[in-house]
Structure formats: C-alpha cells, structure tokens
Image (cartoon, rainbow, N blue to C red; front, top):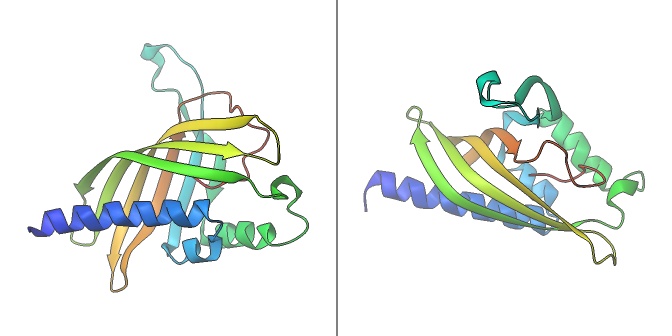
Length: 167
C-alpha cells in the first residue's frame, strides 16, 4: 500500500476515533488529540447574494478557541457550573466525504462534512447541525494531531438553545 493510501486510512481512523471520543464524553482524551498551538473556530454565517461573497463573517465567531480555552471549556463541563450541559447532551458525529490535501511533509488539510445529532434530557426534540469542517492535521511522533479546525455551519440561524458542544 502506498504512503498516501496509508496516510488517508490513518486520517480517516483519526477522524472516526475523534468522533467517538466526543460522542462518549471522553473530552480529556479528546484534548490529547490536539496540538499545543490548536486553533478551533466556528465562524458566523450570514445569507448573502452571490455577488457579495460566501456569507462567512471573518471577524465574528461562535467559537474562537485555542488550547487553553478548550481546556477551560472541558474543565468547566466537569463542574456543577456547567448547567447548559447538565444533564449532558447526547451527540452523534457523522463524518463523511473526507478529502485529504497535502500541505507539506508534516501537515495535511482535511475537508469533511459533518452531521451532528444532539438530544437533551427526555425531550423528544433534537437538533441536527450540518457543516463543512476544514482541519489541519500535523504528523507527530505519536501520530496525527489536530492543529486547526474551522467549522462552517450550513445555517445562518443556529437551531439549538446553546452551543456548549464540540464539533
């Protein structure tokens, strides 16, 4: 098997493992998949006519996180102060249409589509969030690590009560 095919399989396994950790609530294990210089962003989307661009506002985000803020977010989930996630949401991350683009010897850009199912408590209601993710993965001695993630939601009005979940 070629190195490119091995990398693609490793990356796919990485994305599926990451989705499992998020869905299982293993957030500290998820943090171990991140580089120290991680950038994690969910920009605000607006509806615009084609001539005015893609509708992504570069200077506004639902999330604009680094390693420290992600660690604080995870630590907060473990406290009684995380009322927005108590009881915790049940999520299912469906990661599809994965495309890998080499950047250099250590980095790849990974495009994927995400469908995120979320339910809370005993309510029969649920949220579905669809998005494109653009990740930068870095090859390290310990395997692939997430160095950057941008999640572009397919909606301009987020149909959920809060965004206390990770994409």
